[in-house]
Image (cartoon, rainbow, N blue to C red; front, side):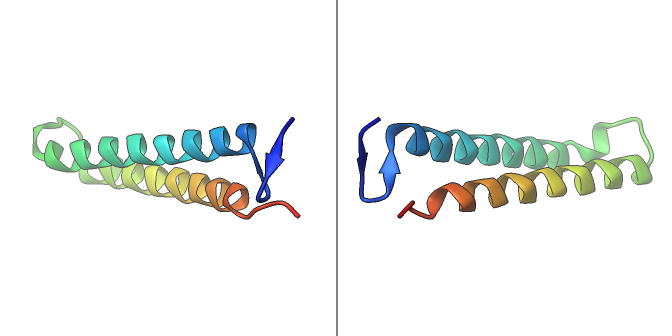
Length: 72
């Protein structure tokens, strides 16, 4: 596989995929926040959802950062 400047096409694809996933999770988080008053559930359940989304976004950011660092 061709490599230049510490990146391969596969590595760039991973970066794009993780960035897209982070974006999609953020949109879901925003939509939930905007519609929070329309849900027929308690605040604790919604808080758990936000906490879970935050953790998933943080995990994807870690993966993204690991691929952003060029290989030697």
